[in-house]
Length: 70
Image (cartoon, rainbow, N blue to C red; front, side, top):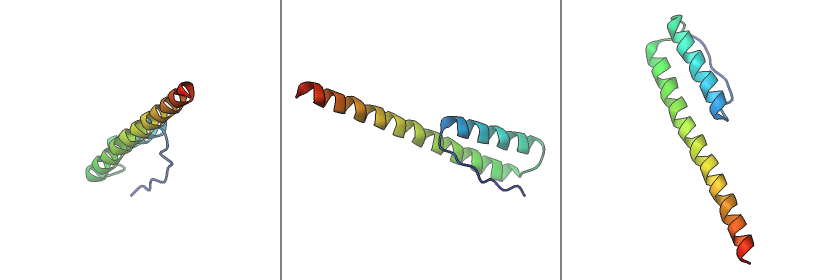
């Protein structure tokens, strides 16, 4: 069984990770259940990254707005 130890800090990282999972599944190097679980985790992580990026952008906009209103 293959071990995955990667840093998934960006959407590009997750894209590469999921592509590797798909390739490994296609080559019968991992089981379908594990591939499904890793894909689900990748999907959740991608949403968390998008949400945190959006949160940071909104915070920056709010800070800029506060500075302009002072």
